[in-house]
Each structure stands twice: as C-alpha cells, then as structure tokens.
Length: 174
Image (tube, rainbow, N blue to C red; front, side, top):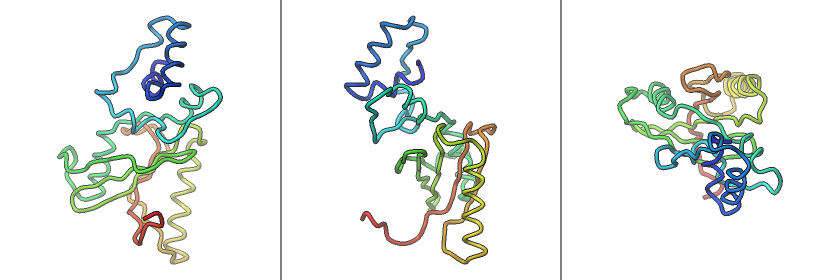
C-alpha cells in the first residue's frame, strides 16, 4: 500500500481512497512517499482512471525502476558518457500495458518502452524485440532498430525495457 499511496494522492478520488486506507491500516503500512523527491509520474499511470478496485489497478500498472541507471544505459547506446547528465528521460505516453519514454541528449533521441507488471514477464519483451529485428532485417520494413533491451527485471535498471531508435516520419497526431 505504501508504494501506491503517492500514486493515489494525485486525484480527489485517490485522496479519499488514501484517507480510507490510512484509517484501516496501521501507520507503518500507509507511509506516503514524498513526490517532490521522486519523479512519481514516471512510475505511475497518469492518463487513466479505474471505476473499480483502483488501488489494485494502480499496482498492476505501476512499475518502479532506477531512473539514473536507465539514463546511463540510454546514454551508452546513444553515444554519450554515462553519469554525465547529458541524457534526459521524460514520459511520452502510456497504454494499457506499457509506458513509453523519450530519451534526449547528445544530439540524439531514443524511445524507451517499459512493460507494466500486468504484462507476462520475459516472453513479451523478447518476442517484441525478435519481431522488430525480423521485420527490419528479413522483410526490409523500416521499423526502429533496437539499441538495447532486457527481458528480465534482474538487471541494474530493475525492470524489463527496450531502447530503440525513434521512428522517422511525421507523427499522425501532429
């Protein structure tokens, strides 16, 4: 409950849920993480709501990772020096089962995709990477090149991820 309290604090309904949880649970289980010290918007869903069992849904769509280590991995594949602060990550979008970030810096841009915990571990990420590689190399379809990936959360970043080139072309929503 503690790790989702800061996600719940974002909305009026979330505030009432957090208040109810504080009344029901001992203080040790309802510690609120200070959002000013962490980029909670990177980890929590920010574009949707659930009508039923919102705390559980938030837990299924909240993924924690080491933001600085992810920046270092992105820096390395983008040709920048890790820990130099030259690469910055911001959330670009989120879907029903993943979050998409854009890493910018060193004159380059890369897309980072992180699956939510609701997605079955390992095979989905590996399958997506294999599919992109097959489409690009065997069929000649211009899909982004995968620069780095991990199909397990047993890595320094702490979650599965795919870092890929940004697709060229015009955005359809522009």
